[in-house]
Length: 317
Image 1 (cartoon, rainbow, N blue to C red):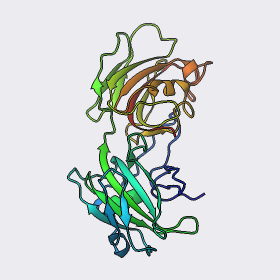
Image 2 (cartoon, helix red, strand yellow; image 1 turned 60 degrees about the horizontal axis):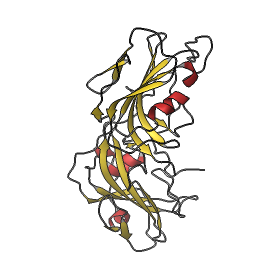
Image 3 (cartoon, rainbow, N blue to C red; image 1 turned 90 degrees about the horizontal axis):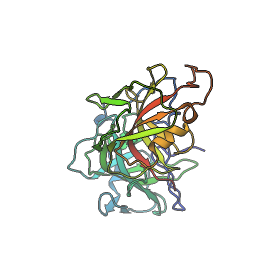
Image 4 (cartoon, rainbow, N blue to C red; image 1 turned 180 degrees about the vertical axis):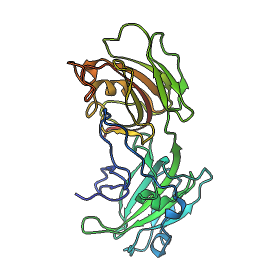
């Protein structure tokens, strides 16, 4: 099934967040290296023009709440158009930023509301803006607090839509919580100016059981089993003392569902933590890639240390 280029919303009020153009899902962290960023720096000039269709939409309601619209039906939508109806007083968004936004979508032919998403915390993961994505082409370098109307042409699968997007905030790509004091004898984490961690392992015997410590305590939504979570991670092997994988230098990683799709210890590390937090977790082989003869290619038999920054969460429905 083809997907809408921004967010697909079902008429039956079951709201489903789908992938944005230019911002694809990533696979489980492993030893294969980090994904690379494909964002373009020219976000302001990427915004599509306002037009007759988008300018004809009248919008009411508070930015951040579900938007109410009025327009003559059916609205003739022949091209992607974007009109700023409220200019926020926050900073301009930049290419590569992860933003929290709210979306209300209407059927351009009937005027019926398809659905809404992002108005409550934990209902939508932060999304990355780039000049190559439809989201970036609609918002451009809009300021935080802005409300934008987009008209989306239809096709054989989806009717044309009117989409109202509210830019709520730019989400940091590193944990921002209050620093905590870890217990003695745990791996020591040092942060670069951009938040990239490095790990110093303590002397002594290698741990044989799963352990974790919260290094920063965030003020956001608590992560639960089944949630989707956006994270930054840095992985070090206790056996080899080498970094085997990281998201830093690329793009944050999406755990599609806590409890599945990643090793057990990675899920245990983030479950129960809050958005904005940073944790360091020690995963013995039983919580990582399994026991057996130590193997660098698939990390079998190795005890791993992960530093994980929790950037955003979408609660399980």
